[in-house]
Length: 293
Image (cartoon, rainbow, N blue to C red; front, side, top):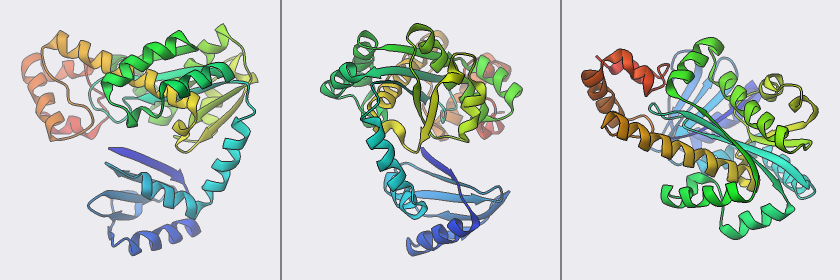
């Protein structure tokens, strides 16, 4: 399942609701929401906090239309023009955020004009548009041609940090900041780009001494940028590798995402190893945990 989130005003929410009405969505409410729009392809929730959250298997077209309503498209085009002039910068992205099983992996890749062209020639793009076999091959090429960092937060560590931060976006920011800092230790630069998942200040506040001197930008669907796309490939490759290692260790399959199959395997793991040991393989703040006996 893919996710799109954005902080919006009440006026913008009205325009977006009109768009969903034209798309024949049905409306109801959930906890802490003003409204929820649902179709067979997606659901969109506008929360009382001002957050808009859209989820579905394929929401790229919907997200593009929402960006147009919010006036984000012209901003993205402007940022893309600025990117051309960046000689060396860091792109970061994550994998495993929406998966009950497995780690959260955040990767960073430093790109300059030389390696950007190599990445383009290799066919590197957003990892969601590549199969796992291709991702594993491309990851080795990225590592051979760039300064990079891969931060792996195992399920046990993830659960520990989630209790500490009590907020997924703060945990994500911590991971992105670590990837940026690790790269700056090896090769200084003054700009970093990340996919937008929350307030920009979250990553800035999580950066340490070296990182606080850089310009940080967050963009919706930043994977369109070649450095962020490379980071998404590295993160996904490590996630796939760690999932395979978990399956070999526990002699069980661990489906990706959140589904009935995930619940079934989580129950099987609990029956085999105990529910307490789900901490070793799963993210326990997911609602899925309530389905396990």
